[in-house]
Length: 126
Image 1 (tube, rainbow, N blue to C red):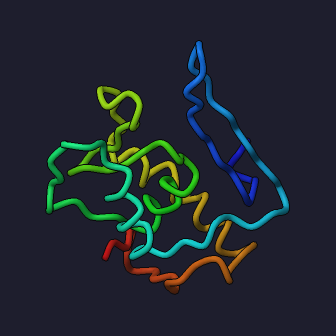
Image 2 (image 1 turned 120 degrees about the vertical axis):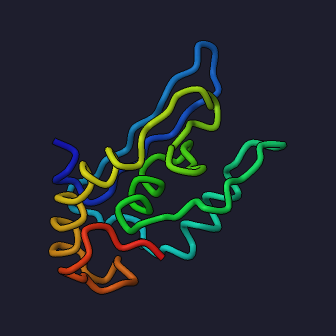
């Protein structure tokens, strides 16, 4: 299960045929989870000419998803792939699946998280 790995990265490769590269390191820390940086990187990933939904928010769980899925971006309530914008991942599903992952990684690598855990909030977003 990749949920037990500290560092996970999935990258689309524009080869013929197109492929993905998966890197996973059990004992390496995840990328630093900084929501403001994730927002900026998310915006930079939007395909040229695509309108951005200003209501888009990024939670801590979603920031980790974006850190791991290097070809994904969030626009509105959905995640899409830069190379296949028609592929959609619902943000609710990401937040649900990433809750135990964030909890586990925060215990193992607390220095990688810019925000402190807030037990009252199911999905902190800023």
